[in-house]
Amino acid sequence: MSATTRTTLRRGLVAAAALPVLVGVLASCGYGSQAKNDEKKVAAEGEKLSADTVRLGYFPNLTHATALVGDQEGIFQKELGGTQLKVSTFNAGPSEIEALNAGSIDIGFIGPSPSINGYTKSKGTNLRIIGGSAAGGVKLVVNPEKIKTLDDVKGKRIATPQLGNTQDVAFLNWVSEKGWKVDAQSGKGDVSVVRTDNKITPDAYKSGSIDGAWVPEPTASKLVSQGAKVLLDESELWPGKQFVITNIIVSQKFLSAHPDVVEAVLRGSVKTNEWIKTNSDKAKASANAKLKELSGKALGDKVIDGAWPSIQFTDDPLAATLQAQADHAVKAGLLKEPDLVGIYDLKPLNKVLKAAGKPEVSDAGLGVK
Image (cartoon, rainbow, N blue to C red; front, top):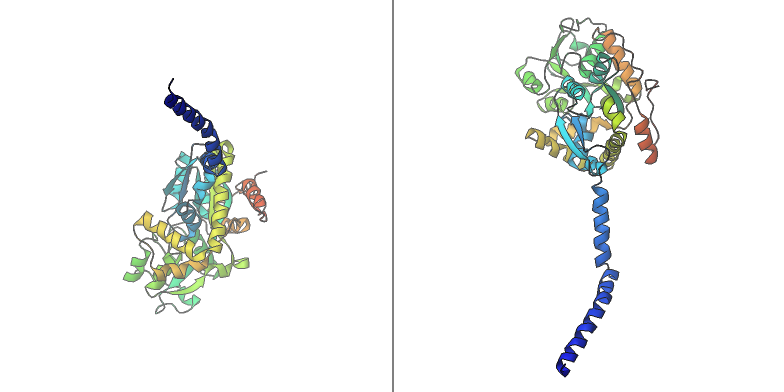
């Protein structure tokens, strides 16, 4: 072996010996350890819960802004990790209940009347209410040239979204409290109740075929933008000025099979409501961005700015007000006296709230035994 060859070999051995040291130095500088930490982080974020997928339903309405924002900002998906979130949107409560019954969705954001109807029609076998989402956000808006006082509503044509829906029941109850008579099914009487889809109510108002409407946001503010006046905010009629407008429901089958997934969605809802409360302007913009994605058109500033402050985002399902709404539907002749005991299962929500350092909420005696 020549001197030159021996020198080259020695250099190679020194370099080889130094290589582990160099790798160790790089790792101690953070390169190797950072890569391992990133892998663990991705694995943790991508870990599946007990279901591969959870199917969530909600309405493209501002009263469902918890769902809009939680979906738009990825808050639900973050809590679900590797369990995939699939979303469906609905324009009416009955169709969402049908989807829940058919297994097309597992969890849904929905109003109190469809929740009550779905639970009673299935004799308590299809759904549970597992949390609240929003309160308020419903107004009586009228043509100020035709209706100047609440008493002026008598003899006028007032729209509600649908026979037997939450706002329809509320308006019929208010009419009854005024001492006026209206046949609930036909809508005829001292006041003409005109059942009109929220999407066409602004056109109906503009054409003069209705004199006002008892409707949720943003429909109420859309009418105001056309010159209507808010005559009454429904929250004024309720103790504490709160009544449930949006619940979270779940298929009993899904709740039983995948409680961890249900808890993850509820964590997402609680975190979304907290984010909405602390970032109101950003949340409003987020909800509007999602509405634009779903409908192709965002709400105008005048409409969303008028609607947003009247909606209260709450984890509490306000169970006592659900019972009152059921009583109103019975009084109107739209519902037989229901047994609502068992409609709520708030144990998962209260577990989530407790872990977040928040107070637990009540089922007003209507929870599972």
